[in-house]
Image (cartoon, rainbow, N blue to C red; front, side, top):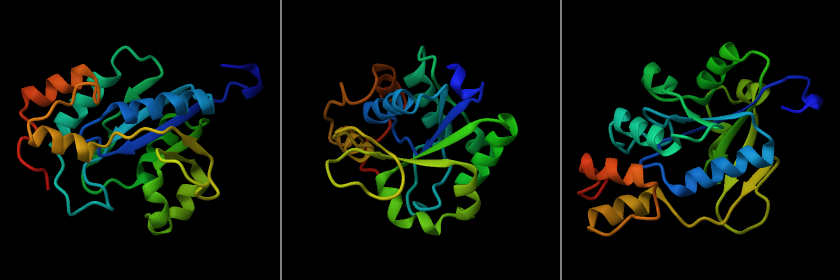
Length: 196
């Protein structure tokens, strides 16, 4: 950690369904670490996204296992089950407050997908959230700047939706997810039927 930061931890939080985690997530995570100079980036699978309550994701413990397998051996990336332990809809403010307790002096960067921006003002306790963490937008498509927040921009055309559809159709997902994640998908026979 450089001296100009006066020892302040730069902590990134990256929440999501991760159903499944794929190389696009991991490339964006690594790019965020390097671009923002993060000391640590925590990937946090949610139980139920407050904005996607109509969907039924893969069981949390399986998504957690896939994430842990995906980042194994990567010293700057880690996985937290804080939202799974809490249960219920996963509100970002609750997660940020948790990390404020465990790392009170940290500068917190909260990574969100560009698709979350239109509804950001509807997020639970958004004013407090904006006061406690700096938003950083992850974009995967070319286009103009999306708003007031810094952006991590990588052109990655990989999506969890496509991966689930490929598995349901019996197509290969090699090179789209880490091999450890592909093995877990096969072992648990995930996404064999169209995922709704």
